[in-house]
Amino acid sequence: MKKMLSLFLCLALLAGLFAVSAAADEEAVTAGKAVSEEDFIAAVAPQAFAVTMAAWLGDTGEGVSLSDPAYLWDAAGWYAAWLYRTDGCDLLRPEEVEDFLRSLGAEDCVMPEGWAEYGVVRVLRSLDGSESYDFQQHKTEIDEMLGVNTLVSFAGGEGGRLTTVLSCFYEDELSAEWMYELTFDETAEEVFPYRLTGIRLLDKGPQMDEVLDFSWDELLEANRLENVLAHYPAVFVSLQTELGEPDELSGNWIFAHGGELARVSCGEDYLGGEYRGCYFEVEKTEDGAERAVVGRVVEDGESGASLDAYLTDYLSNIVIVALEKEEDDLIWLNCTFRGGYHERIAVERGTLVLRSIDFSSGDMLPPSVLTFNCMKPAPDYPFLDSWDGALRTVTTVWEDFVLDEETHEWTPVVRTSSVDLPADWEYLPYQTSWGEYTAYLDEGYTEPYAYPGDGADYTLYLTTAKG
Image (cartoon, rainbow, N blue to C red; front, side, top):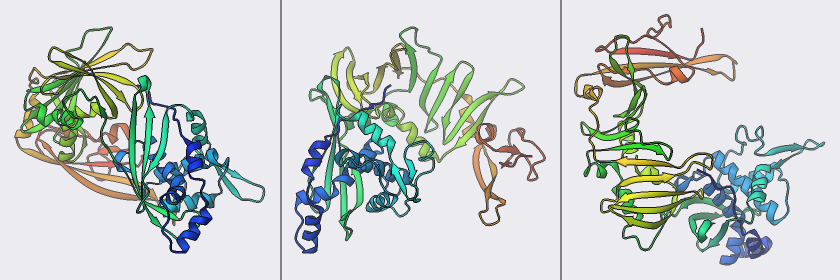
């Protein structure tokens, strides 16, 4: 799957359209006259372009946060790229970047950690000690992207609102649009007479082929697990390549158990999954029995929502849906994703439930097929039945060390959490295997962790201290 690397930015058009005197605009505001739509767009064009590019390339969707420093600084980079392309401006002074960030409502203008070290922006210092910022990554990207397949344009511009339209042009004369609604408040500032107060994606969903007799929302609704399992006993998702037969023993089962959604992943020498907020793996014990070991716990509702969207997640980032053919009980769709790559997706006629996804991971790998088999019930997994019995509480005491800036000493910070699990399930957080924590069974960290056995409550003591 490839990510689109190039854009066509209609900057020459924008530069010509917005070459309006800022002084004239300021004079009109000062005189109390209504600012024309053209003057308003001209005044906010650099901000609008920058925040739109940052939102689109960051794929932040409706979740654009004007309090996120990384997003704000990315927008600052695109502001620098705008000036680089329209005015030939190569460097920005720190105060110019701060002015821009303030115009987006930023309170803290500290550059994100790692930006200078990794070359996102170069900090240049002159002999007199003054600094300049060179947003070389954004400038490089705009040079590489210019003249290929994206257009940024503006619409509206009344009442402090502006709609930006980012259009992408794909192969076969296909195109897709993203529209963002921006809101501004008037300020007394000279450089940026308007401050951005909000940005949101006006998500219309993918462009649907007119011959299809269902909508995008209907397709998503049909593939929510709750609705799929109203028709079928379970879903088994497995992968096969053109070079081999499908592996009926390796894949993901999604089904309902005890009134809750469950996912069990199975493969050679592996069994694990997600149930009631617990991410677990089934391990062999010394006596040959099996025990579910939980490595991560989330809110049960969060887990249920995640599983309910298990199939619809395969449809994420689709921007164009075209009918290929109808064959037997299947409707085959040609789907274009925002990255420019394509997949053939088959849904069941009538129910619209996913049945197959054909895709390629690159020229060097064979085409692959994901199959969604809904005809068989899930296997019996006895360890899930343990949730019907008595539960026990596992308490976890986490000890971290933080550096006190005044004393320059490492100070322990302790937090406590607990989880209720079946009496024969074990809880051992992933951070003990893949993180910096070591597990003990006593507060003094003298008894290394070993499974305490079934039935009784127990306490885990986790610390980042190294003995």
